[in-house]
Length: 546
Image 1 (cartoon, one colour):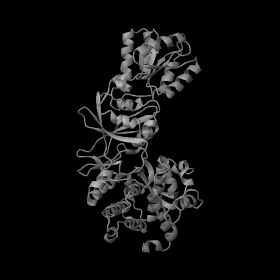
Image 2: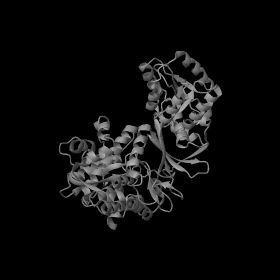
Image 3: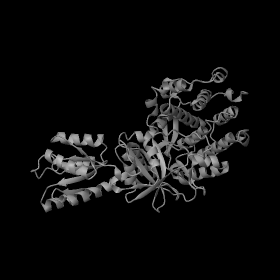
């Protein structure tokens, strides 16, 4: 279905009409069409009518539902089946109850019991009926609100993205999410958070099903809005309320101000806590010095997230692979039949000279499907982790204040997880740079040869390639912070997490585009596999003159 984002009021909201009188259905259908609604009629009688109503509400992604109070027997004063149906639909539809009951005492009692529901009397005048209906529709639809989007092309781009495809034939859900997130707005303006400078080849984590925007309402301060599939937003809100609300220290913690979930699309609006030139960490990393970056990381892991590390706890006899899989929605089980059926096509140098393991096969046989899981540890540390700490979820202003958004994967996890994920993101930034492969390869050995977690020596950081040197400086800072705040010293746990991140990334790239190259991710994974194979003996590969 085409949706006019430039002029939303030209679109017609879909309204579900549930009425047990066939003649009344036709009569009201005509009225709705005249009032610029698209009526969806539930058909049948009794239980069949109720089932058809729920089915059609979902199939047509209805915004509103006008429901007769009595759906079984018009003369039975105990029949409140319309209220029951309204309660079942209200999480995704704005229900309105249509009543022909004339007893004022009865209606007063119903109003007191269901104060959040709007009632329309069958005896109301046509003008009064339409006025009430339009007022309710304005609360949940951009069309009836006559909401103006200053740059509608931003929403058109979302509608044409992989996220927009989740809305199917009903892209108006994208506009309506904003209508519900900003209930008093008359006009909205959108800005994308800059993910990268034009000259950058940053390769960030694949995020095909979410969009982050900065949204302006009139003269108010902007807010950050994340759009994603409805079930993802529901999970994010639940995690935020359980793990983040009133649990982060400092003044620079993004607050979840509002959320809205429709049938297929949802949105979460976060306070925009920065004041000066806010950008994602992805862009900040490209533009600033390693010293600036290190200071921001210290502020995040120490000042902002530090309380969670202070409240960490021990866990015995645990598979690190299973811990990460729980955070990542059992990604291996979902991907193993396609991506993990493939092979790593390494170069002749890798396959013949270095004799590296094939990472996909190694991962499957020694961790994911092994009875002797190499990621099993006798004891580790657990904490509340962000769970998706890549550079586009970390925001920084030019006063070096730093905070996070996107809490979809927030919850109990391996205490090293956020450090490892951010390190993996640093590696991923280098993925498209193929002009200095020897320097990249040397960096891999520097990062993997540690047996204990700590920062690197200055001689280990030095590189002829400034991008590599900056990455090593940042990773060195991350590892020093990890050792300080997690109290874990064994780098074996750290490298297991890094391996999972590389395999997860390669699998997600394969899912998004099976033909896209992800050899750098698999190369690092292969080197980690070889390192873990030689954990308790000298790793001669690191000493080779390559």
